[in-house]
Length: 130
Image (cartoon, rainbow, N blue to C red; front, side):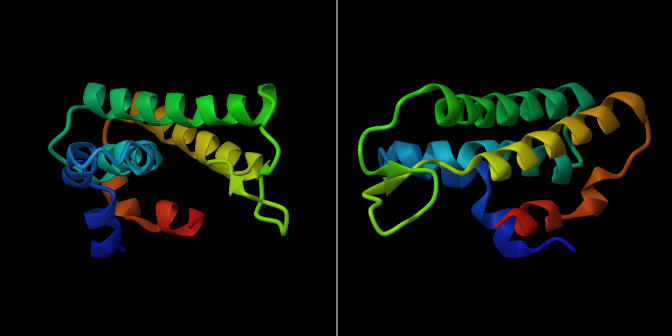
């Protein structure tokens, strides 16, 4: 299953629009998922380009994981939305770890299997996270 809405939402065209409109926070949120989706769905990309996109997705999400665990948050900024939250972080650790593991798995498949149809997975991985 490849859901049109997910493919349309997590696209480089949308990233470009967000950057032109200076909506950097939303662009940063979409960036890893856009890179991840493109690496799996876009059949015209080379293996190297797919791996590079997965690297970008991993690096961005890993930085958020580090931010969750190694920086002190200002009062009112929480990992999950609670009554006292003024803002929440990008995502909680479990979500980020699941994403990182899935990206590593995707990269492993690309590195070790010459003829793997990642596009057949469709958008279900990303949809399930949300």
